[in-house]
Structures are given as structure tokens and as C-alpha cells.
Length: 296
Image (cartoon, rainbow, N blue to C red; front, top):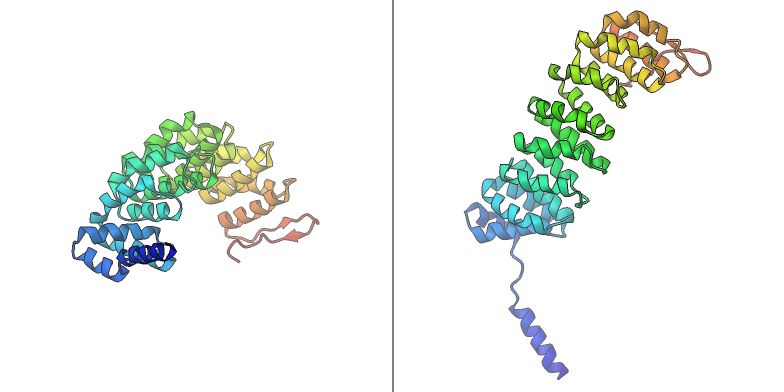
């Protein structure tokens, strides 16, 4: 009986087709063979990383024909295979993927969902903005960062929705939205950032105001050099260097005497940026010191 079972097992194994050769799949996919392309998409789940990477690059090269197959597999996937599948869709700028990728972000159950935020930034379009703004309040910091970078990539097209949504976001989401607005540098954000500079995300708003390089923000930034919170004073000093505000020089010279060493150091650094002259500050030992070069 055991011999019979062994023979049956060997027979079944012999009937199984060996896995398709990857080079053959790529060549046949290039020739337009649908079944080969389907099998190539499945190779994104290959355990051997070298083969998975080759399949990934080949699918990007093959382009649009792979999109429907990738979308069909998307709901079934997790882990690295999901990442590779989403990455191909992002690289192909597949607009059809916006809805499922947005759903992935809204669901907040997929542990690697930051890849969906990245892909939406690559794909672009108005449909990508709303789910990315929602992701700014995600509990996962990596997702928030990926969503912020994606919104910056979308640039000016993301600004109207960001400004509309900003007051309704929780402080954590507001901070991320403000960072995006600062990096985009659109003057339409000025009034909203001035308002945010009076709220719980004051420090982030001050930094973003500096990036706008708008003279109408100078008074707010200079006034913040006297803020009770040293973090806000520091952010104001840094923002004034970014803004290039010559009017701030006298106030920054006063900030060289701030009680917090890092504020004194950044005041010296910002004065060097604005005046083109060397400035020192007193370190914690009371010694006159040049600010550390950020490009050292």
C-alpha cells in the first residue's frame, strides 16, 4: 500500500508543470501574450528578491497592459507583494488605481499603506488630494510623512483643498498640512498660515511662513522672537533666515542673548545668512562660539 501511494505521489509530481522561466515570461509578455503577462504579475510575490525585482522592472517597462492585472490582484495582496504591486501602479501613473489606493489609506488596516500615499503622489490628479489629506491624520507617522511628501509633489493643485480642510484637522494633521503648504510655497496660504500661527501648531506655521518669503509675514515672525515658548522662538529665528528678512536683523541681535543656547546659536547662524558677516554666540560655558556649519 505504501509503495502504491508513493508511486501515485511521484506520478502527480511528474504531472506538475515546472515554473515558467522568467526570461521567457518577459519575452512573451513583450510579444503581447496575455497569459505570460498574468504570470509575470504573479512573480511580484516571488520569494527570490532578484527575480521579484526583475519582474517589477519588466512590468514598468511593459506599461499600460499590466494595469488591469495589477488592479485585479490588489485586493488579495499583503506584505512585500502588495508594495511591489502598488509601486508598479505608481510608476505607471495609473489613474484607475486612485480609488483603490485611496480606500487602502482610508481603511487604515494595511500596515504598509504608506506605499499607497507615495503612489497617489506619483499618479497625481484631483482624485488623489482628498485621501492624502485624510492620511495626514493617520496614527502611523510613516503614513503621515508619505502623505505630506505626496501633497508637496502635487504642488499647487493641492493647495485649495488643503486650505479648505486645514481648520477642520486635528493639531497633528494641521501640522502635517502646514508643512506641505510651506514646502509648496504658494502665496494663497498666507492668511491661513498667519491664523495657524496663533493656534496650537504655532511653531509649524512660523516655519511655513518663512518659506513663503512674503514680507507680510515679517511682523508675525519678528514678534515671535519674544514668544514665551523657546521652541516657537527657535522656529521664528529659523524662518527669518529662510525668508531673508533684513528688517529682522536688530531683533535677531537681541536674540543672541536668549536664555536657550540653541536659540542663540540659530540667531547667530541666521544673522550670518542675512548680513553675510560672521556672528558668534555664547555657548553653555559662556564662551564666544561660531555656529556649527550645517554643511560641515
